[in-house]
Every structure is written in structure tokens, then in C-alpha cells.
Image 1 (tube, rainbow, N blue to C red):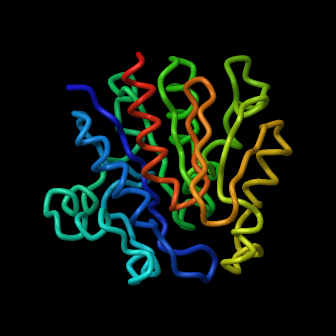
Image 2 (image 1 turned 30 degrees about the vertical axis):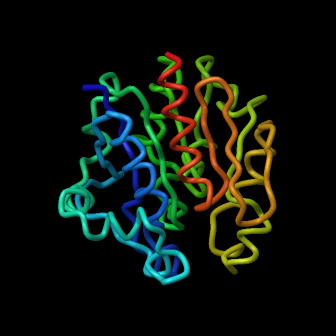
Length: 229
């Protein structure tokens, strides 16, 4: 069966701020991929249970897929026993999808993590689909193209959590860098919608989304790419 790995954060904190996975960003892709006939592997940098950002469970943010996920014993069981990313056989994957939440910004989580870097670069060099949404693109700045010196995102259209959205949630001083600014610095062609509106960029095999509102559209873009072959 064709398979996709969804990679979630392992970190429950960012500095002194309690955080974790933003549930919508895992839940919508999880069901989108399952409904398209893919086996879904839930992974994380450390393996084991994934912490949930309590804010993502608030009434204003608990989407229908997120509600379904919380009541789905198979889904929650997988989220409680994720595979360590380093143990995932990426050569057997059709795509890899990095979801967000501020936990991804913690040192050693998606940032400066050897297994994350290896997974992204390995999949991309094999011309397989690499996708990331919201703070999921924190995985990208450490990655390079096949020459080992050119930033992977250089010259590519990308979307990611914007500087203005970071300012709106009050965590500009907590993140290691502002994602929009960093991607631009590396030569990416950053595109964005208004804050909290869906925006997805597809450039070759790289698929990126701006925020939680983009998670379902981002996952659908992955399926469309895979369907095209």
C-alpha cells in the first residue's frame, strides 16, 4: 500500500511557553490521506507520545477533523505511539508531511535536527513529495539541494507562518527565527494570503501551507501531486 508519513513535534514547550502539536494540522491531513487510500505513518523526532497544544483544543480552533481525531482510537493510539523519525524507512514513502505547532520551533525538534534534515533532503533528492504546513516549514532552513551548498528553498515558491501571524500570537521573541523572514533570506519566493486565510504553494515536489487554515488544502495538494505521478 502506498504510504505517507506525517511528522509531528516532540516538544511540549518553547522556552517557557507550553505548546506542542496544533491538532488540526495533523488531523485534516491524516483523514485526507486515508480517504485517498494511503497508509499513514505518524512519526516524530523522538518517537512516542506527541504533546498537544491545549490552545488547539479550544472551541474556536477544534475543527471537525480535529474532533473526529480525538474520538478515533486508532488515530489517538498512533499519536501516542509515534515512530521515531530516524527509524522511518523514507525510501518506502510516497510523501512526507511536516505539520506544525510551536513545538516544532524548539531547539532540536524540527530545527537543527539531523533526522529531520536527512528525511527532507533524502525525500527531495529522490524526487518524492515533501510537504509542510504552518510551522512545519521550520524543517526547511537547515536543508540543502543536492550540491550540498544551495539552500533547498532557494528559488522555490513557499508558504509558511508569516511574520505578522507570529506577531499576532505574541511569540515573535520566543521562536529561534521568524519563518517568513528566514525563508526569504535563503532565497525562497515567499507567498502569502491575509493572516489566517488559506495559502498553499506547490513548486515541483515541494508543497507548503501558511497556517492551520491551510492544512486541508495542503494535504489535498499532496494527493493531487501523487495522483499525477
